[in-house]
Amino acid sequence: MVRRMKREGVTLIELLIVVLILAALSAIAIPRISQSAHNAKQNACDTNIDVINSAIEMYNAENGSYPAAIGDVTGSTTYFPDGAPVCPLSGVATSYTMNATTKRVACSH
Image (cartoon, rainbow, N blue to C red; front, side, top):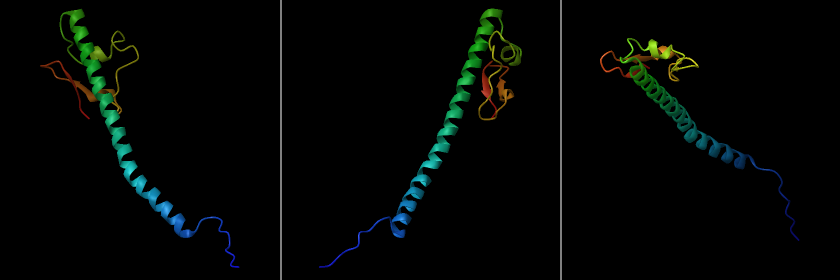
């Protein structure tokens, strides 16, 4: 009668295969996660631009003229009671600039 030993635990080869599989999955996932974070910040910046542009139009409707500078709108607690929007890509509110001709806002990041 041949007896086989009951095997318990994992072998070194099995452990190495699992580590290689996890390394391959992380090599695929990490760049995608960082790209998603950048896309989210870009979308938040675009939303801030839309909000500032809307505030400029409200300023025009209330005062009959466009503001001379972006600070007239972003510094006002009427339009931004919680303070001026901050660009998530650069981290400062001064990233937003207003075109003097078109009265539209853009981000300088």
